[in-house]
Length: 202
Image 1: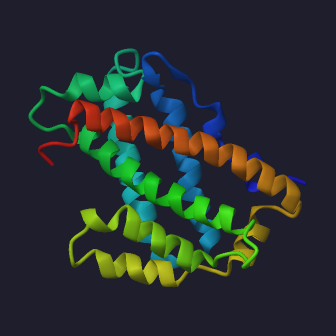
Image 2: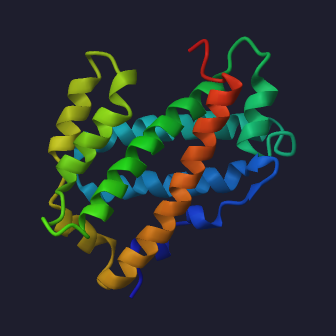
C-alpha cells in the first residue's frame, strides 16, 4: 500500500549533498512535500505556515532560474547574492530553514514519543513545544497568536499517522528515514548561515 512518502515528488533522502552544498532544485522539490504534509493536519490555521513556506520557495526558485548553473547549490546561491543590496533569496532561505527546523523538531518529538512508555504525545503538544524552542523567538506579538491557534488546531496524532498510510509499520520506517535526511539538511543550512553570518542585516 502506498504511503505519503511514496507519493511525494522527492524525498529528502534523495536530495544530493556534495562538497559544494545542497543541490537547489531537489531541495525545493523535497520541501514542497513538507508543505503538502501540512494538508494532512487538516486545519486552515496552518495556511499561514504553508503560504510563508511557498513564498520563500518561490524566492529561491526565482533566484535559481536567473542562472541555474551558477546557483546549483543553496550555498552557492546565497554566496552569489551576498554583495547585492536586496538579498531576497538569502532572506527567503533563512525563513524557510527556520520553518523547516520548527517542523522537523515537532515531527521528531511526535515520532520519538511513540516509543515512550507513557504513551504518544499529541501533535498539539509536539508542535507547541517545537514552536517555543525554534520559531517563537523570531516572531513578534502579532504573529505568535496566529501560530498558537494553529498548534491548538492539530488533529489527533493517531488520525494524522493513519493519513500517512495504512501500513503503519511501513509508515514509521519511511518516516524515520525521511526525517533523518530532513534533519541533516536543516543542520547543514543552520551551520552555513551561522558560520557565514548570512542572516545578518535582516
